Amino acid sequence: MDDAKSIILKILDTIDYSDDKERFADEFLQSVQLHALSNLIQSLPADRQNEIKEELTKNSNSPDVVAGVLKKYFSESEIQQSVQKEAQDAVSDYIKTINNSLSAEQRNNIIKLAGEIRQNIPQSA
Image 1: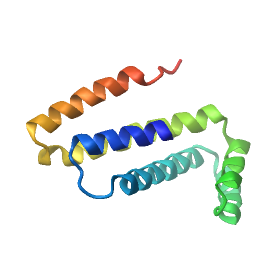
Image 2: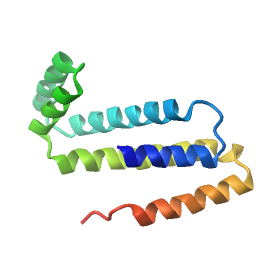
Image 3: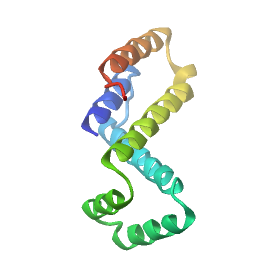
């Protein structure tokens, strides 16, 4: 997630975000992870959804235990793909939301940054 955080921080720098960038990035990524987890859980049959929800409810305060529970139901690849897709969607939605408040220069810089990011993202098979 460090790469994702650096991307969020670059976007915030590009748009001259004036509040706490680190806090925004951390909260943004936490939201992404929660949505990705929710999407994965919803992909399971109802009985398995209930099982995993029960396990996570009991152990939700420990990130290591949560990760262990997830690995019982999903491969590392499935988890990473879900988080990556959710992150891409969330960044896209954020940029669409702020688009009208950006200057022409900021928009151009975001487009340039998006191209750089695309070049550095490994292509899935």
